[in-house]
Image (cartoon, helix red, strand yellow):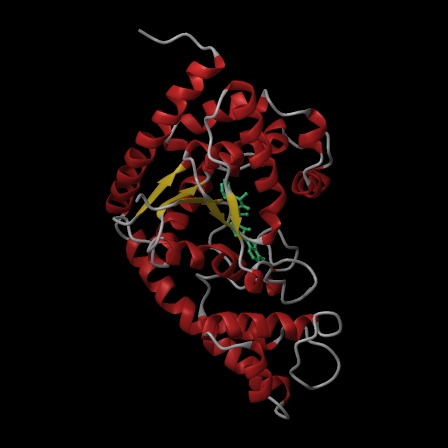
Length: 334
Ligand code: TYM
């Protein structure tokens, strides 16, 4: 039997992934390539929904791809590609845009959050249609599951709605995908504001742990992470959101259940615990950083791997689009 298919994407909008991207998404991508037919893309078309410098976009797209391989994706087992290399994404997005209600798109909370930053009238129409392009990414590959963090739930619901609407109106065409979200790591929070999600657009870099950052600054940020009054290492999201976040991180990185960690640090205070969290983060990030640097030192080879991925992805995308065009009523090209 064919393996179930997964698809996910990550934006090349920063010079490094952060711990939230890694624990919430990329680590699962690596695991799933063992059991699934895996498609992962660097979503550069999504990146330009906010103003972006061409040179920065080029650099960050390569850095993103390199980090994916460095984190453990294997170009043989996974199809790793750049979204803009497969033209069918934009074509399907247009068709889905025409099936989406204005009100439906307007309810997307990520759009509301992001557009609030620019002022709603300054935000691009592309930003408004961002979730519909994401739906196209997923439906194009007939994905069964989509590994993401909790912030993507609403976009996946929209994806299912649009897939279902298309199937209903034009005949069965798309697989409806399920979210693949691991509860324990679905929302890693900011070290300085432990009730907010760790995010590239966060106001303070002190709250973000970048995968490609040097050990010194990483250690410092963890030691200075906002904790709570009191001294006990306890999991209590309500009263101790900072310590709870660090516990979640430590648990995920060392494969140790949280109650075991709580027992281990009993009576030891925050300092010892934070030092160990820092060690776990450094141990995870250092090899990824080294491999990323190595991959980036040979751009030609990296671009070649991405070209192989694009070709494999396009084979699937073309097949889906041939059916979509016909069902919508577009004339065949002779
Ligand atoms: P992006 O680049 O913003 O985020 C990439 C992935 O990282 C997850 N993530 C987190 N998980 C846990 N805790 C956090 N603090 C945290 N911050 C980010 C995100 O949930 C995401 O899984 N819209 C997508 C990109 C996309 C996509 C797709 C995803 C475009 N097309 C198709 C899946 C399928 C996004 O948020 O990227």
